[in-house]
Image (cartoon, rainbow, N blue to C red; front, side, top):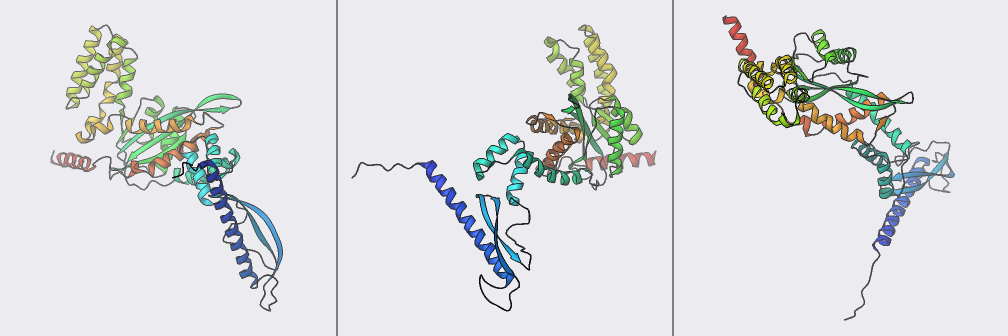
Length: 399
């Protein structure tokens, strides 16, 4: 047996195979173009025929980026008849599959530089940042339609709201821009991303405009709005949704108290605060809160005790709703998880050129999340709310 071992250069083989496939695609497309030209003129090259519809006038070259790489097309020129081809659309340089891949990569959180490297590795051609920007403009048109769509989910008993701050460049200076986001739980118990808007800052005007816009698009039946404490939002809710109650996120409430708590006492204080919201009724929670406030004062944490007394009532609103919903509606965790996903995506961008570009990229990510199992999975059983309301109505009539 021979001891000689045949060694293969894998890189050379891959390159040769890639060139072979690209050449094959190029030859096939050009043959199809010639065939289409023959059918249009109703005659082959140099053929004399009384049924001829036009005449050939040479070719012109165009480049087309396919999934097999960049190919050169010899597009026939015709006299007396326009050349319409199903192979390539007029003024189009890329296959739809390639364009969609570029947009999906960008919206999925891949940086522009990384998209350039990937396209060069896959298709042998580096796509410029300008091309990616142009493709995204097309995607953003669809995103804007989605953002302003009518809300057709019927009533939305629970609405979670929050704002996320991103960086933008304004007049040569860097400043924060706020994107306001709302998630609604529809009457069937499914989550919907019902709104996103540029808020500049989280003031009353921004929040009121946002809530008015949601109402104009069909938001109705709102019974509880859950969010962190924001004066602008608190002042806007009764003006736009006077029948809705407000639930302050308990997690943010705890953090506010922790700001006046020494690190060495934080674990103990956290246990006491959680004990308040572990009570079975609003009345017992109020009693427990008073006991905790007294305990905090005995620990010489007067500021923490005052924060507890001033804000505890806002955190107990959820107890007026079905017990089965308490874990879902007493915090803003539903929207906070979404915010973390947005921050992960926008981190690769850094600073946005303006608020509109920030809004569009955030909405692109929101739309992507909404299309996944996130929006298709039942979040709450709304029968519990219906049963509670029916019981309250019956008791009111009987009384």
